[in-house]
Structure formats: C-alpha cells, structure tokens
Image 1 (cartoon, rainbow, N blue to C red):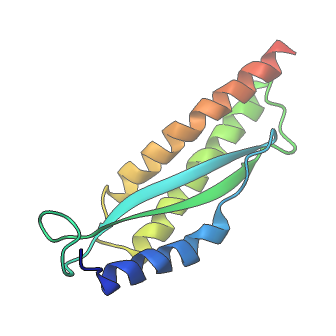
Image 2 (image 1 turned 90 degrees about the horizontal axis):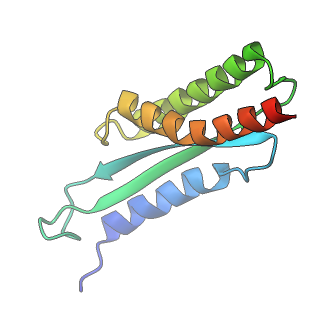
Length: 128
C-alpha cells in the first residue's frame, strides 16, 4: 500500500492543531465537540482515491456559578453549550471550508450530543 504524504500531513496538522484543545470532562464541565469531515483530492486512500480526514474540535463548558435546579440556570447552561458548539464548528469551517457536514449541521450535532450530559446534570440538580 502506497502511503500518501499529503493525507498524512493533513492528518498530522489536524492532530497538532486540535489535539491540545480536548478537555477532560469533570462533574462541573461539559465537553462540546464539533466534528466535520475533510476530503482532499490527493492520491488515493479510499476506493475512489479521495483521502478522508476527520477533524474535530472540543470546547469545555463550565457549570460554575449556575444553579441547575432553577429554570434560569438550566437555560443559561443550554445557551453556553449551543454557543460552544457554534464556535467549535465555525473554527473548523474557517480552516476547512469544504468539509462536511455544513457548519450549522455540525453545530446542531455537537450541541445535541452535549445536551445528553446537560440533561443529566439538570436532573441531578433537580433531585437534590
């Protein structure tokens, strides 16, 4: 199998660029991860000759200072998560404008995934 230097370079750059931004999830933080796929037209890695690079960027969203048992606190956390998802996907879009899915779909998927943890934290706060 012939190794594609361009594909390796893109993958290495993505890891170097985004690898240090991943944040460990703690009880008072939610990780929001935007993910898009970048296709380039270099010598083949797939059956069609198009290498695929998965690019993702994670932002941490803190619950510090929020009363998640209150409606206002829960809404603020959800607002923060949506903002982080939009920011992550916008950053990816700036560097990889031809990536899929769209910036909006990326942000929706990232927020939806993070909302699972948000709802867990809200339910735990309400149960106290």
